[in-house]
Image (cartoon, rainbow, N blue to C red):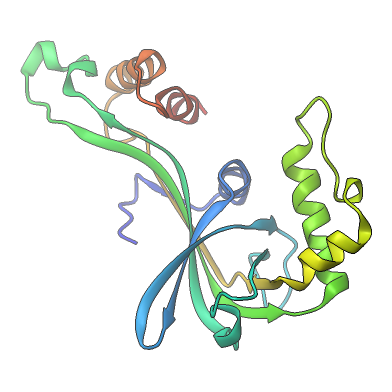
Amino acid sequence: MYRPAHFATDEPAALAALMRAHPLATLVHRHDGALDADPIPLLYDPAPSPEAPHGWLRGHVARANPLWRTADSRDVLAIFHGPQAYVTPSWYASKAATHKVVPTWNYAVVHAHGPLRAVDDAAWLHALVTRLTDTHEAARAQPWAVSDAPPDYVAQMLRAIVGIEIAVTRLEGKFKLSQNRDAADRRGVADGLAHDDAPQGADLARWMSR
């Protein structure tokens, strides 16, 4: 990923925050000699180990998905897409003074690299789907739990999936949030995004404020 110094972000807490806020990753890999990509929700565990200096990513795929059958510790790339939005030159304070402004796009992304392995183990999968469910149901007034479903049905569903695990060997972020503009222009963009009708504008403005 092209990362000019003013947009490069390697702070572990910031990268982890984005991956947890936007867990649906695009998993890029090779299949039959060509590039392929699968959208997969992934849980990030930052605990490092010798084989995973930047922690672990874990998820699952349908048993019918050939991805897991060819995992075999081959390197993959998981892309976490944070908030993004168009930036109009009209938001820049400098527009009135010089008119030397052009449109751009602000966004935040995290790239996680590492070898992929498949985990075809019922107990491991049960623990994973329980953790996934608890994580994403936590904010609900009446959270659903895996234990709410009949055990035989849960066992049937688990047989239809296979776990995947990525030992993260390289983790890099690019937060393009107008850092290359002066303070007045940055405030103008953040304020414009906060009041714009772009679907992710307000979220992006919050990331800029951080």
